[in-house]
Image (cartoon, rainbow over all chains, first blue to last red; front, side, top):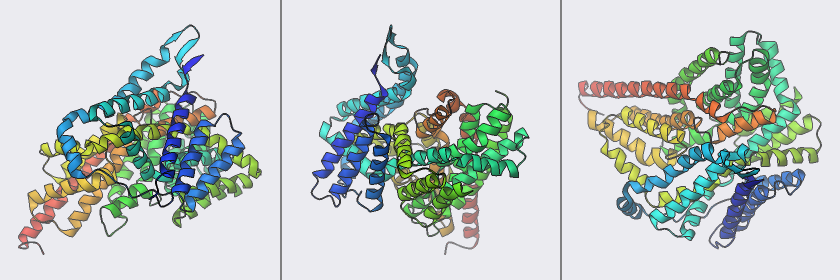
Length: 320
Length: 230
């Protein structure tokens, strides 16, 4: 038996999303309060009901969220942020104490991961040993919030309001990683990886170990440029090229392959307008006429880091 | 080959700036149908994988109340004060310092900064001010170059620091992928092998910042020779 499960952490997230949805539903000046409240409440349902509801139903709920987002129903109210003078005053008063709660989160994560997973009396475990990373992180975030409230003297209402402000700043893009992971899952089930792998296997002599590495890293970078997201590329390229050739055929180390492979994907992210939030939005924020100025500045960086990744993987992946 | 229709849809949808969630959903449906699944089967897959990957969203949602609260009480303003005290006097050094702060902090799991939160209000203006302090008024091209490099520093620090922290999306996604394949790969090992690239990425950024400073200096010298700035 486990006292703190990861499902309990997901339930906390779900409940928080319900509170957020309730807040939004009560904001009369919110331009899309019902659509937005519905979106966050549905996300809360998927967090709490994952094991209670049939997957098919959850799938339709996800579609409902996508429809709400795509029809512009998920928006935020013009935020009433604290003025700069007010924040400066607080910064002056609190000095470096303001950093402590922020540092508590990673500290709890590391300590918790090392210690919490070991604590048990007989068959009764304090936390699920397999999920200790996530649980420690959740506990750290909650602990940091309590310490932050104590340090700043803020109320529960104030912290809930600030959280809701930030969450609404992210908006529907919050669920994009989960959606792309679902897409990766469908790609995998449909055998897209095998098709890609087949094409690469035909086109490239992956029987040579270093060529397999080049094909995998190149595939990650190119596919990331197409998708605009290294996460989406990871499942397809790793399932299609990385696992069958580098790990299964040549006996490479999967941890080294995955770590450096993902970072090769990031080199693709530096080069593509598809990653708009990293490359195009900053150009607009910085009022640059040339919308591709950031990408142009990143070309030499991406090429150098990519070449280094390929060399690192060729040297390391078959050695450890 | 028909199974690659989802990939084509993603590329087309992104190029045409359709709502990203809608594009991803359409690509999932098209790929599922092309592989012979029914609508309900596809919905079941979406529901299952969506909830299987709740770990990607959990840290963000749980961290926002505390981050929002700290921002409200002057976290960024305090960081500004600290950065101003250091006498990093060139545009390249300001940007490189920010890249280092960003990379180190995110490798410890603390995401401070961002394009809107730090680069526009803080890093780019400070870098420009540093360059002006050395060589006088800047050419338009130099201003564009400084700002673009400030944004690049944010991306480099963010991307190549993040994978060292075990609780972030990338490492959890990789772990989830391997679990789905029935493999148990340690998150610590994956974080460890991200470290060499993190150093190389920072070295590459250092090189670009040196080049930036040298270019600004050369332009300033040319301007001085030509008798001032137009």
